[in-house]
Length: 445
Ligand code: TRP
Image (cartoon, rainbow, N blue to C red; front, side, top):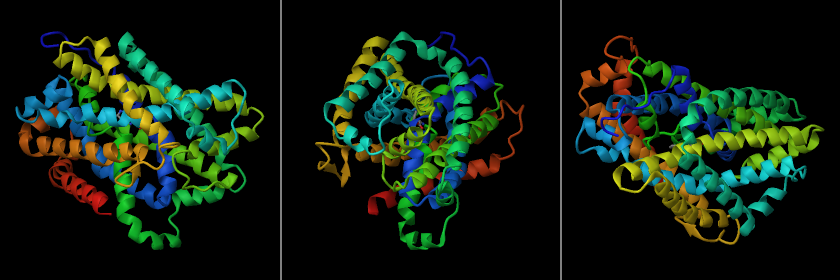
């Protein structure tokens, strides 16, 4: 890599779409609605938005700045700022394995649903639990998802990520908005809208659940914005010097949050309309949407389209995750990219098998009181990503010379950065403190 000319994003729009392509995935469409449903709806949404502003914005901006200044992979970009701090960019290597181990299970579920709709067997609402608890079938689908992710990485098509994302993200936005309008017009949908947007008085009872809700909301912000694992350092390293970092950061966060909120406004009204419990858990979108599409005459077509779009969004995220491991292995060892990809995906597959089985025959096996599937979620969202982000804040806020950081953020003093003082205060003190307090709470609770 040294000495070779590095690729650049062809335009600022292409970069924002690609970063949004990594950020937007199962985290927005599958996870956000169900975690929100399990944690009291509106209270969770409020905390989520608060954390997206005070944690998401400064940390995402920091990752992009580190990457653009370093012009190298995540570990070496951090090392350029401080020779002993390469590890701060390395959390993605273990983190990506942890995330992909359960991401591929859900990716497999999405593929199975897309296939069912296309072939005309629209599944019933209660079929999900039965399907997920099977032994062999979900594992075959998740294997399919891992194979596709690996194939994209090996064939180098991920270079086309900018083109794919520039088409996919706007399509997703249009299609999901139309679905939201439909979903909100279903009978009793208003109950779901209220649950999602308005904290009601009975939420007072949940006040003692607040620390746990905060833990989940923070983890969801990290996960949804792809933070703490060096992904955005890598993306930032392909940015041109005149790109306005702060403005780009705001756009990525706004698009990601809009897609999450729209997904909430599709799923939760449908859940209340169908009389499903909002705290059902990981199967929520599958049960709720089969119910909705099942009622429509064009349900087969719309359901197919929906699951294909979700699958594409999941794939642009999973390749960004696998790429972290593959680029590291192929730059640091003498493995070729193809071998590195095969090795990494074999390890991921091994971990993903117990994650899948924890919905069926391994449902009694727990680690720290969590099923294997939930343990991977906890490990990545509540431990690895926050810790990675914590060290990146210390690196940029305390070890990087202030004027150099300022210089990077303002493209050499050519663009204004009005939030500089607030930003510095956030990455130096507020973000690290919040991360430590909330992560500790996750263990005590
Ligand atoms: N943000 C993605 C989602 O919401 C998942 C993801 C992709 C991710 N790349 C990441 C999460 C890097 C953490 C780090 O589905």
